[in-house]
Image (spheres, one colour):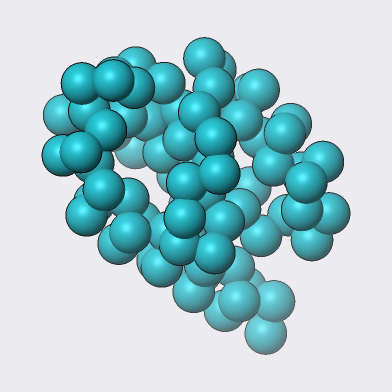
Length: 82
């Protein structure tokens, strides 16, 4: 059951990210967006910083992180759920 909750959050975050991306690409290119609840909460220089902040803010760890880029990149575990 927990995996379904995680996957649902990741799917919702990724859909929202794809819609927002054209509006943020110039300003935040190369940053990592911390996402929760289908919204970007903040931007970070590294994926590690984004994950640390996300797990502090959301102890249930239902977050995702996306790199702000035009290239399709698979961040492994972090692009799916942290």
